[in-house]
Image 1 (cartoon, rainbow, N blue to C red):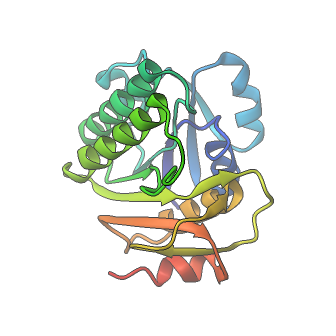
Image 2 (cartoon, helix red, strand yellow):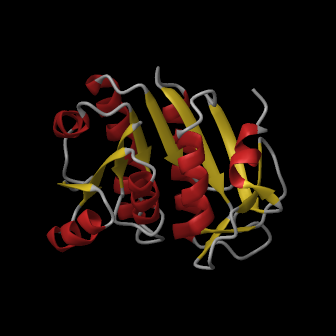
Length: 217
């Protein structure tokens, strides 16, 4: 049984992961920034933790993470302003990594971005900054002493998950449902043999757990 702390638990991926972790008998602390999100996260089986990633200090995050063996960072500014993206996806990730190390957390899983996102299209300044920040966040985590995994899903959809994906160290770009991203995160959490890997993820034909088990060591 894992003890998981989720940063961004009220998001579309995070909330799906809270439910899956709880349904599989894992303990999950669900960090969220709005008081009104508490009841829904409790209903999904999580233990709510009211804390804003933009306002929290490393010390306050570390205190909240105490006792967790895994942190999942799925927070994101969702294509908002450059300033908010920098604060959440950039500085927020860095604070979370530092806090996890201070709290003695062993494993850190980051939901990042597929590097081919937006290729061949007109890219706004905001999106270009988003991709830059995501890349730097990957670098920051990869240079830490944590046992990390970086998951890079393709374009996220709200389609119902199929439970089948394409996962690998380098794959062709495509879409992926948020359901299947959450299912993949659960599979990674339950497979401790996956360590210090960057995994790209799209919809596919392979059952999630089989796909994750097949990622090269």
